[in-house]
Length: 166
Image (cartoon, rainbow, N blue to C red; front, top):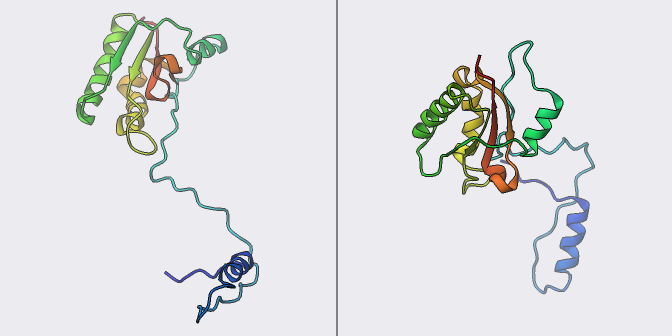
């Protein structure tokens, strides 16, 4: 990797910082001519995935008022699943079983606690659960997904609104 040349501002700062140094100091190369800068690249290696609700089947949807109530945490939570302490495989099976069972039981609003994780950008489960909820088995019974309010776990939990059992 080639060394980058300092900007004019950096060169001036270097000269100002080194002006009182006695002895031989390394020379600062002149600043390169100004070139158009590319937009800075965002490091997405550890960025959390945005939580996206699974796409509803054609013709099905959630009315605006219900969607707002879900996002605000105003729907009564009828069941909760806490994934703390589970491996990724155990959590995946638990989420799928939980969603299907709660739908079969006629529950509507449930809470899945993933935890916020200790890594920068969130934990493994926090990133994986939205993907699992978008898989066909879960997607078939889910109407909407939203990040929980702070009193229910905030970024470490998800509200899941299940379809009515037909």
